[in-house]
Length: 484
Image: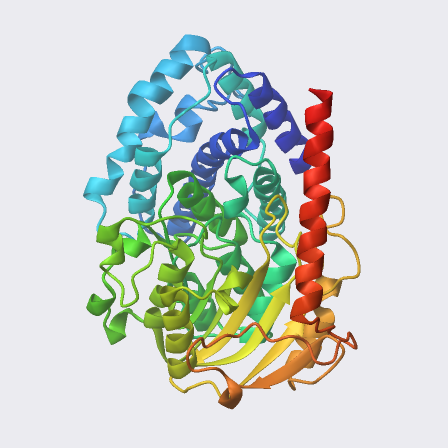
């Protein structure tokens, strides 16, 4: 039922002039899902208050509740189309009254971790892009049929929502930066192995994939107490996100996975000065896939010990600083980080190796991230002791990966197993940092167990090949001129 509802919603959004891509579809579905969830949450809390003999004061005032404007019901429990707004009336209410009202919650919230603050933040950033009030009415009705009351229903909805995020990532227009393959995230979490009571942080939260998977991992542990569940809900997961769409999607994704008021702050993480970070601000675990390839302005770079325009390198410094001493991290970064010769890259590798135990590097093949050609590695490290030995694993699923054959959990099973003992294999090996070049701190170590012999050519042979290629190029140019 839920799957068909999502399909119907996308079909309507596809027809609307205000929505042109999977990003728009996910964004517009998100704010409507959020309001429907909020309605279900209020009903649950009201029922709980009645059972305890207490009075419940709703978060949302009567005219703005879902049951008032979106889905007023008749005596049979069906939507009352005689009183339900539609067309221009519905658009006017949503754009001119509902959104401004909900945005106002931010100013009166008691703190950023409250549901009231999340309401105000979301509706101050997101906009209704649906241009037809009749299309909006056609979307509201299948959303009204969705239920959030049981864990089974939330679980099914979370899977469908994850599928939407994945499709959005494949759709381009920077959608890919919101989506890290879930099998890779699950493998990272298994290696880092968080425990109940530890705090987990992602300062580049995107769609919330790392936090959602970490929540599922911890929730699956046996014999959790009520105290454990409260800790998971309120004192475990923390994130920051700069972009409005990603922020909204992360909030909705975490809610569907079962976290009522996610501790996600809408901010530019890199504007925080590392010198201002105190012990109380630090976390036990960092899990993240920061955006790379971006260029940060000089005033942002001033916040960091090693100044560089490369966004991912600034994030890596931030993550190291945000870890408690003894804290653990699993960070995705471009594989060129291991070997770049610019001053910032060399300094950052030196800082990482001298201040953290970089015990594992997972080398991911091209195609791991659909729609992105860059090759990546995952850095696993513990803060507080220098690196003595690094274990490398070269992931090779034995096929070209893409949309039709993406990374799966089985592809990473060997890595997870061998990593437990840092075992050597045809795909894995260890490197003693005592042999590292102190001028470059280069970590681009070749696999000594691959069985491939590296052919070392003489300078004369290289020069002969260059001359032959020059001659070939000259002949091609001569042929082209002859045709003109």
